[in-house]
Image 1: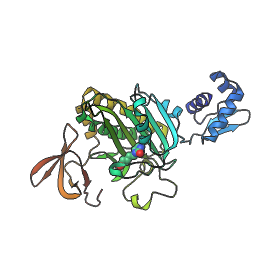
Image 2: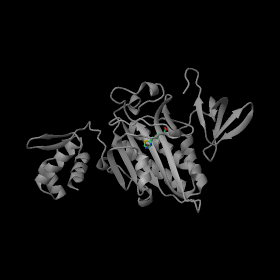
Image 3: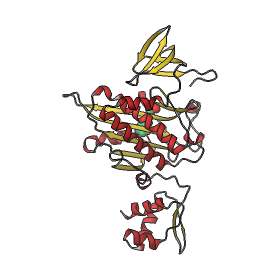
Image 4: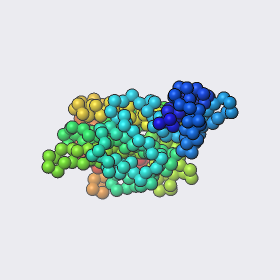
Amino acid sequence: MVRDDVLRTLEMHRGELVSGGTLARELGVSRTAVWKAITTLREMGFPIESISGEGYCLAESSDALSEAGITMELKTNCIARNLCVLSTIDSTNNYLKELASSLPDGYAVVADCQTAGRGRLGRSFLSPSGSGVYISILLHPTIPLERINMITVGAAVALCEAITEAAGFEPDIKWVNDVLKNGKKLCGILTEASMEAETGQLSYAIVGVGINVRTPEGGLPEEIREIAGCLEDFAPHPVRRNALTASFFNHMESCYELIVSGNTEALIDRYRSFIHFLGEPITVIRSGVKEAATAVAINSSGHLIIEQNGQQSTMLAGEISIRLPEQVR
Ligand code: BTN
């Protein structure tokens, strides 16, 4: 489509003027077609400046999400090679769930806004326009059911690696899958799977991640202000959502390869590198009951080993809070 080709070219020359004649020649279309494409892109919200007689320029500061902007930085063979970028949707996980049987492995959907974003344990996930990025990936892996938890582990690792690369600081993982900085939750992960009743085989998994990039207009709602944070609160420079999203896909692909090949020990090593609370006192919350414990290790299955009254035990699931001297996170 001419519109996407024009956007791709402007993305590649972000901040520079590209003349209408150059665009038309390079893309093999008329100048009128270029002009129509620019009009449509502006209507879609892309800040394209023009200087009469000189050309068009995608503003350096633009942070509009686009397929062209993401694909340009993609290094994958599978993840997000089929990609759909939406301005708004109820939930990217719901979108993939409806189409799961007809879409290929690695198909990804990215949205600027969700009207009914879903979190774990039936909670909602705040997803306003322009301030975050909401991503779901459909996977059709041939793996034993007991390895499914590795998909969430892989997403947490890929998020941390992408944040390090695209936002310029290293976050922490709070077991099992919260990505934090200074105790503030930056991202959420929701993995959902479907199983074939007859064979007991996994038919698909959908891994959804929501990343808070910057504070939405009007601020974070009161009820999450204490617990949630945004990448730009910690980043040394503005964060570009297209680059962040592409980086997440690139890292997710290498995690996915480790999961499918069964080399989960290598994945767990990457996961452990973002875990900084081992040896610290924690509160474990199991079936709503809180108990004091010490975090000891992450085992090769990604489970948390804790110690209570000199006895070690393994937590397969549940929630923990990490108690630090001056704060509870
Ligand atoms: C949590 O922290 O409870 C998990 C939040 C997961 C949110 C993401 S945003 C993209 C995808 N679509 C959804 O509806 N939820 C996930």
